Image 1 (cartoon, rainbow, N blue to C red):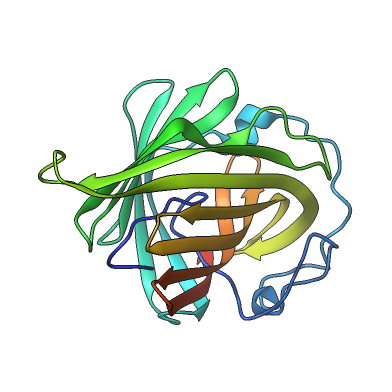
Image 2: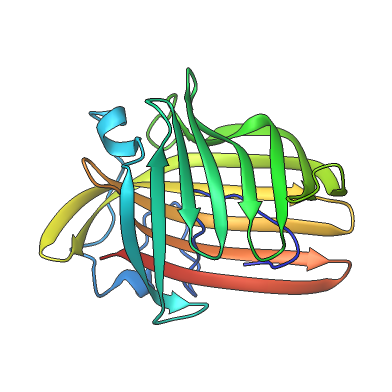
Length: 236
């Protein structure tokens, strides 16, 4: 995760395992210890709200693979009301989450290490209501990055684009439970002039549990120097 330029993702500050899994339904090797069978063709999503609405409270994720393997990450979700949440990934990032007519969107992201805040216009889609199995929901817009303590100080600006697909279903063994999950594949990129950001994420959501696993790969290129991070995060 960059300490110089912020980035939203999916949910929740999350990473790619060292593999080339695509939306073809291939298994992701770094999830081998928690998979109960390979991902299957995406089915009908029965209850969007029960699957995707943020759950208030604290949750701990373990990094199974990638950057900082073996560490744990504390994520605190605070409900401001029925349509607004703050998701804080301790010492990493803080995401705003808003329930709109189009789904869950994120107007802003705070990157703690760099002390910057990113604002997205229009708000960045996180989970569209319009998701159809196997079909990508796409959007684009502009991004502005400012100093969090001094918002009048602009750090960077540019454009973003995103593609979100319900590309598979999968069963994961989380603790003593086998959870039947919806897998969302999100591809995000941003052009900030002297820097570009790309992120490829597979998020696993289970009804009544929300996000239970994420696998991501991120690359930031500043001028010509690439910085890569990856990981597989699993809910305890």
